[in-house]
Image 1 (cartoon, helix red, strand yellow):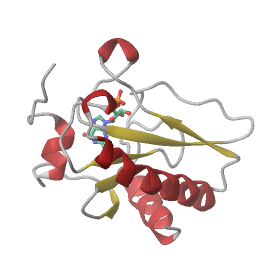
Image 2 (cartoon, helix red, strand yellow; image 1 turned 90 degrees about the vertical axis):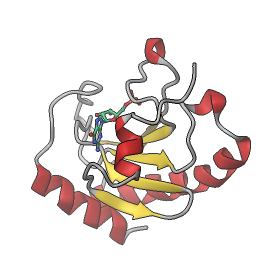
Image 3 (tube, protein in one colour; image 1 turned 30 degrees about the vertical axis):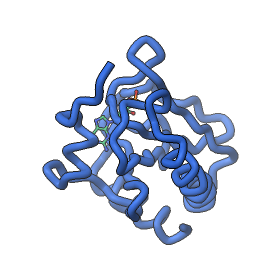
Image 4 (tube, helix red, strand yellow; image 1 turned 120 degrees about the horizontal axis):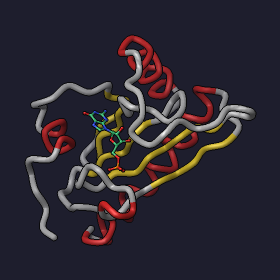
Length: 138
Ligand code: 5GP
């Protein structure tokens, strides 16, 4: 399977589609998931192009994992979550729907079930606020 640069995350990275950005550096773009499974669900999108973890350059993974940890800590602190789930899918049968390397950071709250993967769209104002709050904890 080859990388297709017409995927939606590549379009967001090129600025062709808007996103609720939390953080950006030369390694990755962090943004809110518009179909969140919980309050504060965000995505770390690799700047380097690969379909997923399987075809990623290991040096890219070495650079991105510390950022994933930072975002997990910031999202937990900003939302007062009780835990954080880290998810990363590889190929459609495993649940991947956007074929550009990314990691999910999903805050988990006691007594609150996670929503479905790719479920309902979140309120844009709420996502903008969450993006600011998480950014403030990075
Ligand atoms: P995966 O490829 O790991 O299965 O999931 C892709 C994720 O991207 C899903 O959680 C979905 O809600 C999210 N997503 C899909 N399209 C968009 C979009 O246009 N903007 C944002 N911010 N997230 C998206």
